[in-house]
Image (cartoon, rainbow, N blue to C red; front, side):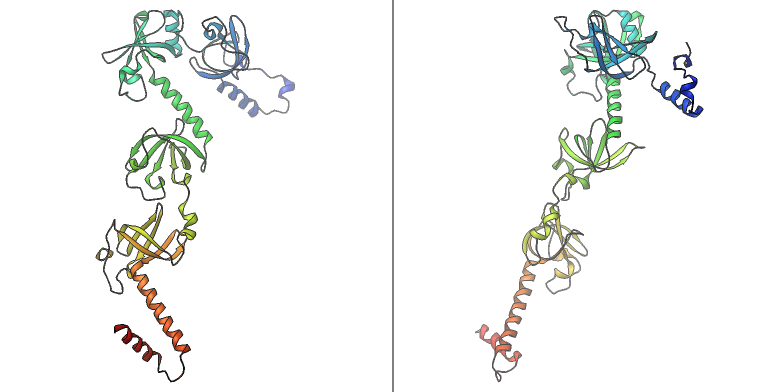
Length: 406
C-alpha cells in the first residue's frame, strides 16, 4: 500500500468549492500525523476488555494495547475508560495500530527485546549491580544488559550504588549475538523527555509571566534555573534589589524559586529571568520611609570621584555629592573624608522615586548648617521685634556672641 492509499479520497461533492491547494494542505497535515515506530503518544482509554485496551491517540482509527500490561497482582485492570496513558507506537496493520507502555515486564522473550531494539520502544530493567564501567541490568526473564555510567542519568551521579535495586526504563542501543550482548541507555530517554518538556514550556511561557523553577547551577554572573525542562538565566543584577556580589549568598543549587520571565529568544532557546521582580519593590515606600529632611544611618557601599553611595536599606542607595563631603572645604575624592564599609549618619536632601534617586548629605554638616540657619532666623526675628534705637542687627549679633563667650 502506498502513502496515498492511506489518505481518504474525497468525492466530487466534498471537493466542490475547495481548491487544489487546500486539498494538498489537508493531505500534508494528515501525513504529518503519521507515527513512527517507538514514538511516544498521550492517549485516552476508550474501552477495556479482557484482551485489549482500546485507546484514542488522535490518529485515524483506534489504537490497542495488550491488556496484560495493565493488570495488577490480582489480575484486575488498573485503568478505566477516560483515563489518560502514555504509550509507544509499535506497528500498524489493516488499520489497527499496536501500542505498548513498555517491554520487559513479565516473561518477555528475546524476540520482544529485539523488536524493542528495532522500534526504539523502551524496556524495563532492574539495576542489579555495579560492574566495571557501568551497571548490569536485568531485563525480561534472565536476560542481562550493560548500561555505561554515562548513560544511566543526565549527569554523573555522586553515589553510583544508590541506583542498585531500582527498576528503570531504558532504550536498547545495541543488540548483538542474538541477545547475548545488549547495551542499554536511560539517558537518551531522559533527554527526549527533557526535550519534550522544553518544547512544551517554551510554547507555554510569555514575557512577564511568573513561573516556578529549580536552581541548577550558580555562576559569577548569575544563576541558571530549570523552569520545566527549559533552562533560564537569572543575571546577577536581577537576583535582588540590593547589590549582590556573591550569588551563593542568596541562592543555592536545588532551591525552588519563583521568577518572572523577562525576555525570550526562541531561536537561540535563551530565557532571561528575574527573581527581583517577584520581591517587594523597596522604592514603592521610599518617599514615606525617607522623607526630605529626615536623618538615617547607612553604610558607605561605594566611592566614586563624584561622591559616595550610601546603602540605607536593601535596594535603597542614596548619593552624597562630593561637594557636600568636605564641610565647606574642597576635596579631590570622597576617600579623603570617608571609606567604604563605614557606618555614617546622613540627612535626606531630596527623593526622586521615578528615577530611584535619593540625594544625601552628612548629618553632622547638615545639622551644623541647620543650627546656623536657625540662629540667623532667631536673630532676624529678634531684630524685627526689637524697639528702635537698639542698634543694628549686626550690633545685636556681636553682643549676643560676646555674651556666649563669657
